[in-house]
Length: 269
Image (cartoon, rainbow, N blue to C red; front, side, top):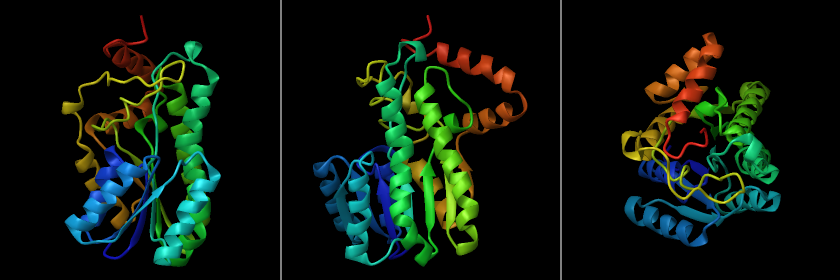
């Protein structure tokens, strides 16, 4: 990955920030996108100082078409190419569907699905030139719908369907498409998860210390992109969930419900 130009959305925290460190450590040129200019610039300066690489911070809200186009245009203007696009920006939710305002579902779809569509559409001509890679950070919820996460699950199913359909369109032209399903990973996604009215949850309902670290997750993703893999499913519980759901979907309906009922302050009474 040395001197490859890598764009990472949602780069200011969690898995995105860990990916930025991982690719910079390997000598890649990293382009960081997120909504917080201060966090992005601080991270870009840190990466340049720590690893001696070029790092470009481009503030962007992936729900805005113009921001996504600007991200790609700024990258190409400065570096002349794009080798890897990692669609990592995402938000979650926790609320029963019957209590959830429609705007919450729309927000999930805008960030998790349409953000990836916008960035990929503008980056694709350059990725075709470089015969590069597209990665989408999905979720086990993209294989198995999770109760109280209807909008999140729908957005991840949509993302995986998009990537699955795109893959055969571009594979004979040298572009690899990777779908990543991290499983439970320690990050801030649960802290920023939306509630039924669109406000943020604030505190994670799960024990983050028992989860895979964002750094370990980033290393697995880096290796999968380097090896041009098709899919990456992480954590034992993630792999078991995908396997059981394929062969025993009815059983998984009950198991996922019982599992999520045990969360602290569960919406299931």
